[in-house]
Length: 281
Image 1 (cartoon, rainbow, N blue to C red):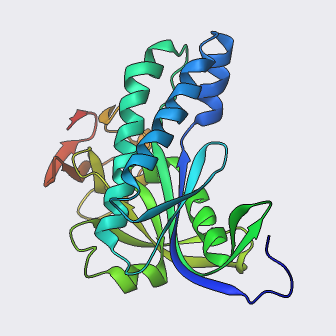
Image 2: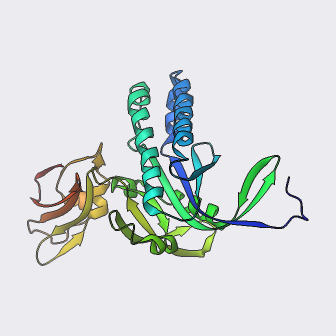
């Protein structure tokens, strides 16, 4: 047990907060149909996976927090090591979900899998009630970064948010990943200001809209987010329209949708006339 007379022990760690998407929705559905044991079993299986893989990736499985885990990595930091580990978690959970949970749900959520927040810095290490505990801003930051990930991010393929500072420390290793700068308000961080961070797509095999422009040569608008919202089960199947664009950029003139998307590690550009049907990928 740490005593107030003890020297402060400070350690440097990468902090990863992993959260299971739509867990409340899934649990409620499984409870109604008497299949809640399946959820318990999935959490046990993921815990066993983390325990078996953590020595290989030099990871410490610090804490289970109800619908996810806080995981710590020691120096020397490695972006590839960290992201490969969390990608494995996402893949394992998705496999268990599709094999064991999906068919037992009356109302399967549109979004499942995991989301991840990552930061780095100094933590105070201490012992409380015979357990190792850590205190420090990086844990709070990683949790807030994970919490700011929304449905639009996920449907765009972005399941990881990393702090601005850590990204620039590791950016030479991150060149093979699709990383995009963004700014988000984080609760109780930065006095209400928008915080610079990076969102990272961890699986380029999925269908992902990169950019979408709708209109004419004279007048056009960015409709990337509007079309991302209509992705279902890794597919886009809609009619090009002013309704989806939420605007008519050039009234009375036939318009074109130009869409740039990624799939299976490659980039594609397609154009669709107003009123035509899109089926991608």
